[in-house]
Length: 248
Image 1 (cartoon, rainbow, N blue to C red):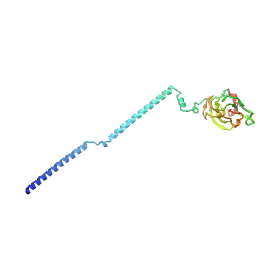
Image 2 (cartoon, rainbow, N blue to C red; image 1 turned 45 degrees about the horizontal axis):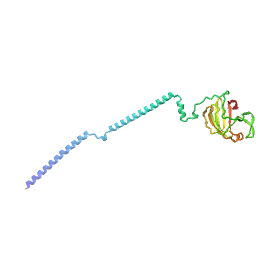
Image 3 (cartoon, rainbow, N blue to C red; image 1 turned 180 degrees about the vertical axis):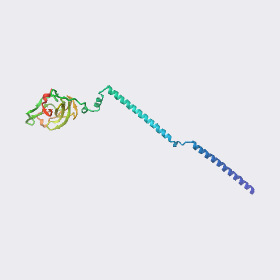
Image 4 (cartoon, rainbow, N blue to C red; image 1 turned 45 degrees about the vertical axis):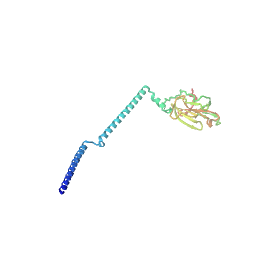
């Protein structure tokens, strides 16, 4: 009986050893296979060259976009040049369309001389004459004094025109002649128009003869009896001269 038990124990031990041996062989084969697999496979999440390819593609796309923009800009520039060649005055037209206005208008050649003639800023009777060599009577002031200009009768809101080509030297106001515009006619000739309102002329602007520079206002307290008027004063080299000598 004891011999049978020993024999059975030996048989079981042999089977256990055999099984363990087989398991060891299987495990060894699996390790070798895994190692070989690791040596042959590449982890896609660790491949940096793919990022470089993406960067290269992005650069190529950006280069293409820049090239396209340059092409569009070049085409636009060529179109502008062709338009300018077809219409040399287009630049001035664009400036006017952009709202450059009179202040940016092309400079006029101002060459007023003793033989030049001015337009009347408004049409009307002369209420007070120029008089610097003797005094004349001013009804509102009820006194006699010299007059460096002329006072032209008019109506409120009548347009006042530039008497000649001119550049605006000053736009201002005082108690005697109200709002006024001083204009340079060239060759040391200047003209002042007073008793104005809604002045459209601005300092530095060039005006063409006959261009509206403002409108007739109510008279100041210095001319309330004379009534609505435009004050016109002319100077040559700083000295007052008779405007009527230069009027048409």
